Image (tube, rainbow, N blue to C red; front, side, top):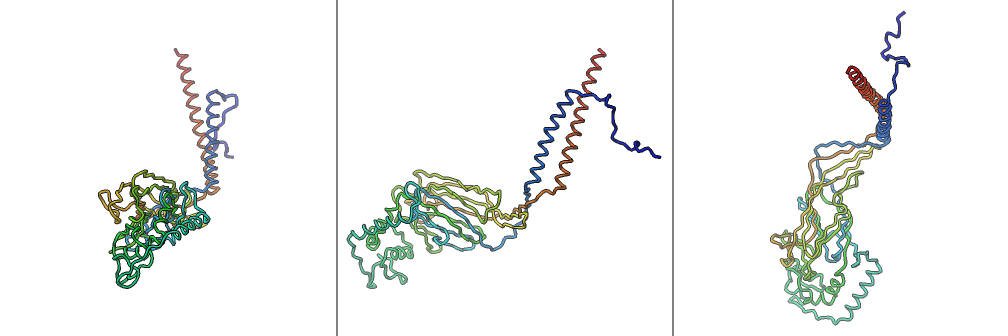
Length: 389
């Protein structure tokens, strides 16, 4: 009968031949601590979802993109600000009050309630009614004058807004509201002055084409004039200019993705006494997130660089221009990367966990045995050399 002990590769030594050393005890204790730490790390990997990423060329497409925005302007009233969006496809969205909203802030930074706004309006109404109405001159068409801005489209200007519209149609800057009887009678100047010192929160979701473009918040009434985008801010400007200090509470493109941090969230810029133009150049990276449940989130992340330019607001209503003149405001220029990032959630199976634990145990004790043997043999060799001398 074949002796089975011939196949035993696990050689044993007699108990009497075994030697216990202090260094061996230290090696065992250190190995035990490492074993526990590595086991906890492996268990943590088993219990938590792992995320890995891949890259591929983004096929693009003409889908709409949602821009989520919340920006605080602590020193600019809501009545001063216009919100516009333009893109390279030629689409221009002016006065986005139906998608992006404004919330008035008191000089102390607190949101104004509906009761506060009603009270302010009632005060302005009383002030307007107490003033003597100025006579409105008639023009050649027999109706209210547009102060030289009459055209076939704007023959009569019975209100302050109609005068401003006629001026915009002619490409004129509306700079002297005090000389316009319609504006004086309607309390346009009083309403503007009543909001000086207030702040504004611009917030909401904007749908844009998935092409390069810009979104900007700037003072003055915006309009198109001979294919040029113009802001007329001369009727609201004063000697102090416009304080474009702002806090970006949120700026994202599409849905939020777990673990993705938007770099502009929480950014605060202070211009002080300078009237300036803030420009943010954003590179949007299309991103997909695939969860374990099979849900897919198609969204975006981005990187950004920014630039500030000090301006002279006496240069006119058109902008932005060069040599210190132009339009103050906050501009977000965005473009899209041709590369798409894909994130996938992955859970470790129990088999992988068991194999990992076995590998840790085997590896720790193998290395520990080698280190202990090396130390023991080194000490024995040192003792034998000492005896020889």
